[in-house]
Image (cartoon, rainbow, N blue to C red; front, top):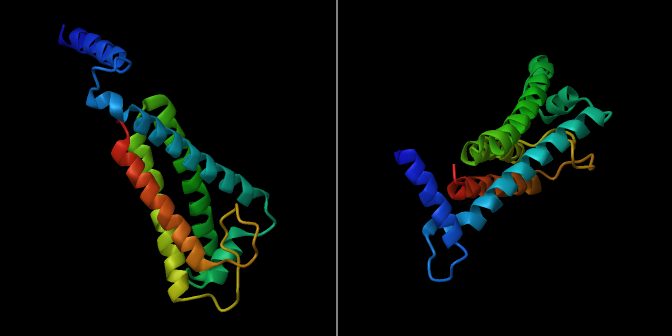
Length: 171
């Protein structure tokens, strides 16, 4: 009974969004919530695109990770496999959360955390640069030589945008 009344109230409030005299908080936030959904879907799509690009490139992610010098060469292959699997799982999981479960906030936090890890990794490479200039292994940048400060700022910015999207997400 209460649930039915709540659904009727939602229909009334959604209809009231078009009434100039009534502006419930939910109506004012609806465009921001839609933007949050779109941002998360775009971020997941970019992660999928990077994953696919990495599979198509001739460079081995394990060799790139090893050349960075932060991960020991002995575990670079396992690290590369873990990165590829996690990226695919996060991207598909985020799309599923937004499109099927309507849980944009969780998906935005997942992807924001991923971007934060990438920003931190790039920040470490600024502090401890590789011996030789190397690729970032991102899968989407065509440059063979990475610009670590730019990558750190880019991924840090993506982190902030996704966490801001989580704030405005409806669920």
